[in-house]
Length: 409
Picture 1 (cartoon, rainbow, N blue to C red):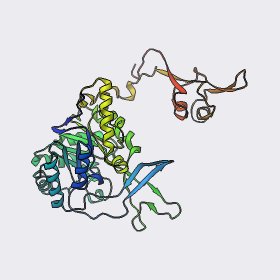
Picture 2 (picture 1 turned 45 degrees about the vertical axis):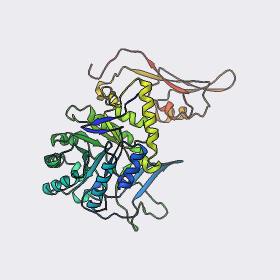
Picture 3 (picture 1 turned 120 degrees about the horizontal axis):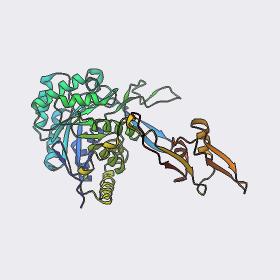
Picture 4 (picture 1 turned 120 degrees about the vertical axis):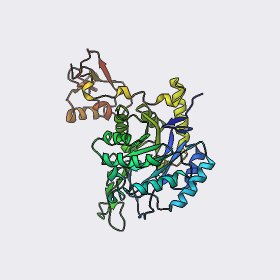
């Protein structure tokens, strides 16, 4: 029997699937419904001084027939009174004592104010805190969110303030709107963080209505930058998780966030070092019930791989993620086209001619049929032809055995 339970920095959860701090975790009603559906944890929508939100708030990026590949969000932290949130948090924790309930926090850069907020919130029984040092819009203009997350000294200082009074584990949520996220991750550890989470949303403008000239979204005719999330940001998030996971100075567990929508996404993040994963856009798009597929898919995957515990998956692929200079520059793969599968659309030929290395030739066979043939001596193994090919398994990248040589040899 596969064990999906995880332990991240002392925070126990029946499975690694958490809802991220966002609109789906705005109230006790929502979090209870999520736990009933099967989510193992939830990070409550960021608490702080009550603020005023605007309408409209979301904009979506659609690609062809695929809806909501990305979302732009200009919503701020909770606009509900702190006492209302605390009452609901207490009730949720009482009803679901074995689920992980994390409170996301944001406050002005004032030690006493942070202490007050932490003490108030931990009194209602949360399992941990997540410090929101990543939100890129609205609050950052007031010196909070990403304005803190972009300054390692502030990250370390405020984390230290929180750990002075926190009696539960402290997670620091980091912004991707920075040159190298490892610097702020290290600062969080220096400040006493028990874990880090990444990524928060990416600064963005999702689009412009070309008929009206208005930004998407707009508030009574004017727009502003917002936070970008959804499946489109997954590669960025996965890279940042992997970089921190292989950094020996970021020696704390990681909660992975960013474009996670399927159980395969979860496996990728866990292989690259995430102990838990947080989901937002997919839950907003498809509802809380997607967790059933996540649980079923991860369970079947672990069972098929002969892995008894989800914890044993964490970080397995981290040793395989390295610096460019450690790559084998003598390793070579070449494209090989399965003529029986080729539909002669010529997409591989055009891509190779215009954007690669001109190593696919068009030849007429004895039957008068055009054949696309790879000149393997000229092929550099860039993968572009296999990427543009619309037919599954029509173009394979075949390795040629050679002695391993790295940049340093």
